[in-house]
Length: 390
Image (cartoon, rainbow, N blue to C red; front, top):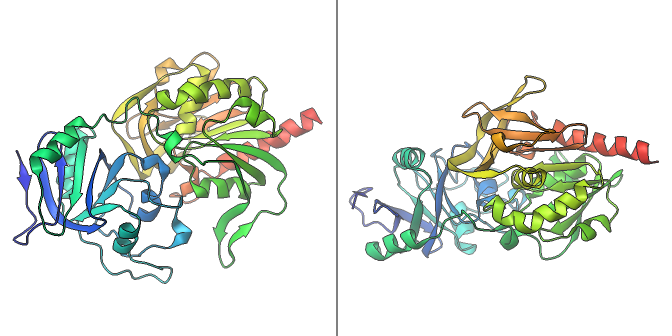
């Protein structure tokens, strides 16, 4: 059983992989243990947004950037009400925050919200292991007394079923429908309200990030959010100008069992449809394509994606462990965007129809504005449809 140690001080946290590898470190945040899939994220900023991104349900996140926690946390940066990722692994222990926006420390924030963190880990070695062996199943534990039953932790990791075949969207979706009118943050006003919306949009919440909804509002949309299990009748009863399919966690094939029939019925009405991340995968499944599990997925804010129509390269934010199998795209559905890291699919569109989706997150703005045009494209498609149906 391979082990790593962080020094002479007694470790207060440890990360155990299903293959028996053990990483010891210093715990922070909540105490206890959690079992999940382990991934790594290469973003240099946005740790709070990552931890509150519902797409990370069922995962512990290894941060390759060492300075995690140095800007503290603020409610304005939450993508949902509470952290969704199961825990975090970092190189250096979080420091006291140094940022005028900070309202709390990362360690205190994690403790209040029941999420475990471990510092002092060789994240470079851990990331190499993930890249070479695939995303492992792990047990992460924090005990201030440093008492760990390693054999039991290995057993828990090995017993974890993994994300394949797992529908997590139902766990992170909203309990009931609601309206959204908050727009993107702008200096000096902050978050303003949309008071002059021109397009009625129904957003299906598979684990929607708040900033996606803000971008829709900023693009002139009056947004009504429905739970992941909404039917086509639920959607069409609101008489929308367009339908948005949100990001989310888990195996798209599992979520597709109830999402795909709804999307097919919506597509039959020739409404503009726009999907992001899991929503992209849901749309692909509804059109007849298939999805596959990736070795270690794409998680970061520096992913170059090529727009096949324009030749433009966008710097994008990504978070997904499954991808659309391009070879299964049916006639009439074309690939619009491709990852320049590994050639995997990052976007599709239906020929002759205002139906499109992308695998990456245009609302995250790593470029910073490379991909906002997608929201404008969706709004333009709804405007065009309004002209033809008037």
